[in-house]
Image (cartoon, rainbow, N blue to C red; front, side, top):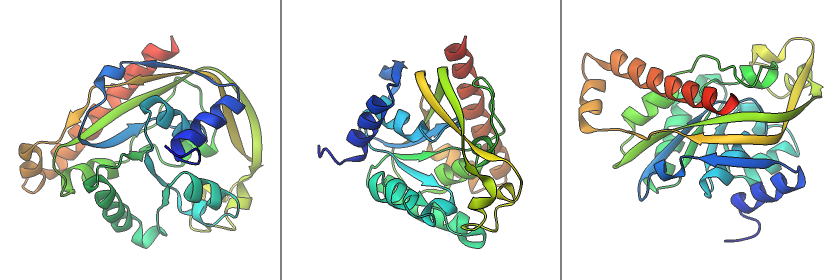
Length: 241
């Protein structure tokens, strides 16, 4: 593996930040399958942490603005292989098409279903917001064989919090995001000690897809979203206490 690979860069940055990581339930990681990783999200370090925990590069969907900001663009996209979502009108279709292509080639894809909110507003380590349902639609719609959703919880045990940069600075790069049009600073959460707890994989079956393409579409999407939210919430409670 190249020393410039996303996984090696992740490990190097964690070492530089003196971050200790504790991994639990690694026996639950699916083998020889397409994997969609779903996790809670509070820190810019989360993608690094998940890659290190799974010992694998993960292609993360990231916010549109990350593809617009110099330096951030080179690091997040150029070095880590994240793919930025398009502007609002094309966002969903772009996410589906790019993710499906990656999953078909058995590259791990990562999603943070809480969206941007927990990144721009400081939250407590044991808090988790509602999940957007895009990842569930992706899993049920994708033409991918042997697909597993892998819920993972990042539980901060010790961290340092500081201010990064004014939120309104980001509106220059993405004026369509209302969260950037407010006073205050973008928080930076740096983990010193962090637990990563791996949940039970949720396998997408032909029965799931049949329901999704029938009258039970909303029900199966809601159940899948709620299942992953509940699994990660339970893991987070285990890790934080």
